[in-house]
Image (cartoon, rainbow, N blue to C red; front, side, top):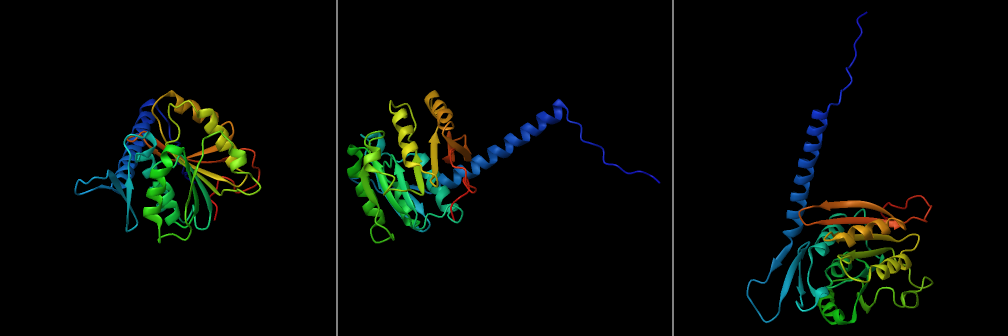
Length: 259
């Protein structure tokens, strides 16, 4: 009887190079398509007025964000839009309805607003000098639209976190963060804050823009305490979106979205 066989594929340096090139091209195409979709949600005032603001489209709603250009934390950064796009387009898997959510470094409030519109009970936190503008944006865009009224409160990373958010009364399903890691001197305090707020069933969704070495070093340190899953890689924006959960959690299902 004749024998039939499928010859095994022989990998050569040339074929490997072609595969790598194809993978890079596919990755670039995904990056371009996703980045275009995210940035298309942004719009600007059609008429110049006394107030500086930027807009973001959530479903059919217009969210208007007042910016304060003299405060670094009161500017709408692309990382926030990346995280908001992910939350909206993955709302079945990462269901925020009735979930307890805290946002670190809420800034202009876009992530808090979108999370609230998705049905979450949100606590938005930032430094004292940002809170006025943050509260204005949150109130302006959520009043009468959300099941739960978002709470805006001060949080200085690493200071009185255990007293402000004791585990006995504060258990968060999600920690959200956008562009909180950059070349500032409080990375140790930020790590301590993540560590305290992230309990055994807490999930972290964190959008990060890579600028300088401190960002890479922080990610390496972060992985010592947390499992880290990359959800988005957008080289054109120098932004990655991560999903994280505690390493000391042994139960099944960690690393999967809460139902």
